[in-house]
Length: 138
Image: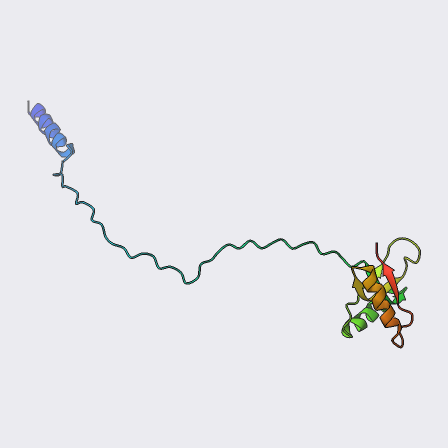
């Protein structure tokens, strides 16, 4: 009988200990509206500006030629000399056709034929430039 009483007491103690304790329900305070300052406006407004796509640049087609060289190193040296003198000099080489082994060094290039011819005529009047000519690059 002691065992039953002890078992019942233990069962009662365990049951009371495991029972959820309910706390008294407190009413939640009503949220109060707190005035918050308006966000500061930036001094400048960043706007996304769409930049127009650049138009394709048509490469020069007509070149006033100063000299022609078989040796590429000589052409590079002369082109450097003309660039130092302020010319927009380029080396032009064709991989096809007659005289394709030559490296031509230009004073400058033009998009329009008439401008290239006019500049060639002006340069031919200068001493030492009597042999300049126009190359049409295809």
